[in-house]
Length: 201
Image (tube, rainbow, N blue to C red; front, side, top):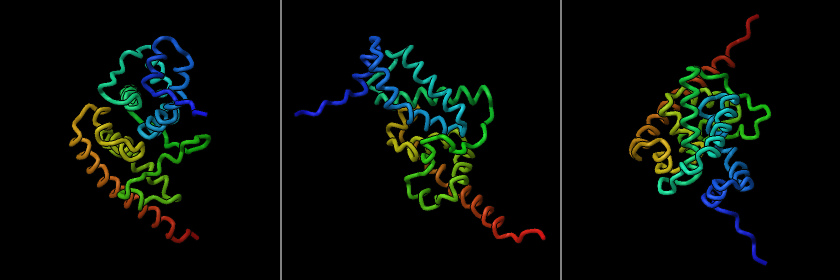
């Protein structure tokens, strides 16, 4: 018996553009967590991540024909919409909400980075320091870390989303890694000193 093939993203989007609600629901189920993760990592705010995720898929309903398959995957297209909405939120409320506490968030583990530059510094007890370090990066550096390190997109995919050259992505990521290492080392050293300080009698 043959196994049913899952529809490709482009096929689902084509069907959704004709009013196929099941196709749109399938796209939503397939990509909502990734879009939410991206927005959360960029903003540090669950509320912002929820707002951005909703806006991304509302945009997809309103403008399904805005996707150009020659410019990349549907996933990259959704990341691009999410990025634009995060930037709008940032301009509207030029401040970041408190760090996510992970409560009720099945994707809280997304803060774990795969690249060895960061991975060697991450332990469970250091997760908060990693969150602080990522959120302390300038936006142009934070977004390449989120896309390439946390979401594991290629340099080419990140370049398409950000509208820049691959070399620019590599350069920003290199600077971001250096900054992250310095910030993490400083934060972790401060935490160690606080733990080792004798309690006031």
